Amino acid sequence: MTHMPVAERRSRLLAAAFAVIARTGVSGATTRAIVEEAGMKLASFHYAFESREELMAELVNEVVETQEVVLEVATAADGSLVGTLEQGLLRYFDQVRQDPRRERAMFELTQYAMRSPAMEGFAARQYERYRRLAVQSLDEAATRTGHRWARPLDELAADLVALTDGITLAWLADGDDGRARRTIAFAARAIAAEASPGPERPATTAGTTRTTTRTIRTTRTIGTRGGAA
Amino acid sequence: MTHMPVAERRSRLLAAAFAVIARTGVSGATTRAIVEEAGMKLASFHYAFESREELMAELVNEVVETQEVVLEVATAADGSLVGTLEQGLLRYFDQVRQDPRRERAMFELTQYAMRSPAMEGFAARQYERYRRLAVQSLDEAATRTGHRWARPLDELAADLVALTDGITLAWLADGDDGRARRTIAFAARAIAAEASPGPERPATTAGTTRTTTRTIRTTRTIGTRGGAA
DNA sequence: GTCTATAAGGAGATAGAC
DNA sequence: GTCTATCTCCTTATAGAC
Image (tube, each protein chain N blue to C red):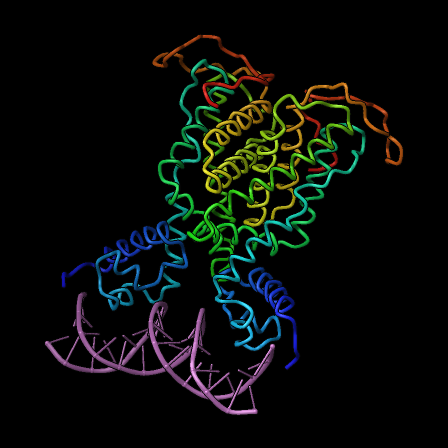
C-alpha cells in the first residue's frame, strides 16, 4: 500500500527479523513470519532483499556493529576494583534478565553465522568486538580505582568475555539468579586478581554513595562476596 | 531390507541424527537426511519413531545422560593445584579441538531444547549434570594436591562450567588456540584462588612424571603460566 | 512500487503393497 | 517389518496485473 524508500523497508525488515528470531528462534524466521511482523506483503520482501540469505547476512552484520555494552562500568560502591567490576557485571546481568530473548537471539545468530560458509569470519569479528568493548570497560575500571592491569588488556578482555558468556549461557539454561550472582562475584574476584595497585589515581570519589574512601584495596580479595549472592 | 529389532533401529537413528547435526546443524537434521546417514528408508524412521520431535527429545535426553567429561583431572606436572587444574582444562580443550563439531552440536542441541516447550527443563538438567561432573573433578584435584575448597563445591563447579563454556564458545568462533590457552591459564588461577591449603594430604605422588614433590604450594599463584600459552 | 496468484521444491508423515 | 508411492503443508522465490 504505502510507498516507502527501499532503505527504510530494508531497515524495518531487519528489525522485524530480529524480533522474530528473538521470539521463535532462527528456524522460525521465515520470510513469511518476517513480513508479517513488519506488516508487509511477501512480495515486498523480495523487492527489498535479493533473498532470505541476504537479509540474514545483513542482519548478522548489523548486529555485530551495533553491539554496544559488554559491561557498563559504574563507579564502585566502596571504590574497590572488585566492587566496581562486580557492579558492572551485575548491570550487564540485569540487561540479560530484562531481555533474555535478545541474548538468546544473539547466541543463535552467532551459531547461524558459524554454519554459513558465506559468513565465514563473522563470528570471529563479533568476538573481537566483544573484546574491544571489554577492553574499554576494564581500562576504565582500573583507572577509576587506581589500578594497573598486570597482563595485556586484550588477554584480560578475552577472560572477561569468556566469563560473561558462560554466566549468560548457564542462566539462560536454568534461570537461577542466585547462582548467576555468585558466579558474577567470583568473576569479579578473578579479574581483579589480575591487577596490581597502580600509579593511576582514581579521578574523583565525589558523587558516589557510601564512599568509604578506602582507596587502593586490591589484589588479594578472596572472600569479598560484595553486595551480591 | 534387513530385519532389525526396533531398539537397534532407534539407536542407529539417534546416532545418525547426532552425526548429521554435528555436520550440518540442527536445521539440517531432516528425517530424510537422518535416514540417509543411517542407511535406511524414510518409512523406517516412522516405524521406529512416532515423529521427528520424538527422536529429537530422545536424542537430547541421551546426550545429557552420556555426557562424560567436563575436565579430566590428571595429576599435575609439579603437584600444584593451579597446574593440576590447568592440565585438566588443557585436556578438555584438546578434546574440543579434536572434535569441534561435536561441541557445536552440543550447544545447538541445548539451544534447541530451550526453544522447545516440550523439553522444558532439559537445559537446566544438562547444566546440573555439567556441575556434578565438575564437582568430581574439583574434588579430586583438591584431594590430590592437598587443598580444601573455601566455598561450597557446587558453587565453584558453576564457576568452572561458566569458564569452560566461555572458553569453548570463543574458540569455536575464532579458532585461536593461543588465546584459548591463555584464558585456560587464567581460569586455572581463578579457580585455584578459591582454595585454601587444607589438611587433606595428596594420596600418592608415585607414577607422575616430573614429581617436584613440592607439596602444598597454593593460593597465591598469579603468574604461574604453567606449561601452556 | 505494490499487490495477488502461483510456481517449484522440500518438509513430515502415512497408505498400502509385499 | 520393510518397501514404494503419495498426501499435505509450508518454504523461498517469481510472474504479471495494477
